[in-house]
Image (cartoon, rainbow, N blue to C red; front, side):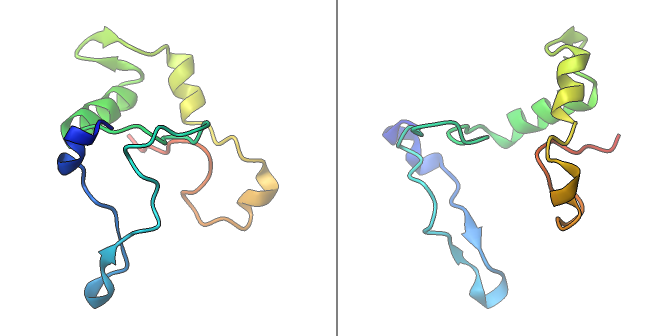
Length: 101
């Protein structure tokens, strides 16, 4: 994120109630990640993220325009973690997007 836009950046918080505090154990958003990290380095507005989610819910289309192939959306919704680790992971976790439409 360019330094001139950092004031628009929402800070990540941790804890709750009287223990709510800014999470200082986060990477610097002005530094480009050195390697792949899922969503590392991706920033957007809430409205754009909502539009992205709507596109996924519509199978890769938005406002009648196909942006992703159906197979791409299917792969994004597929958990790519082997079944054994999933036995000890809480529901809803894994390596995929989970949407209920």
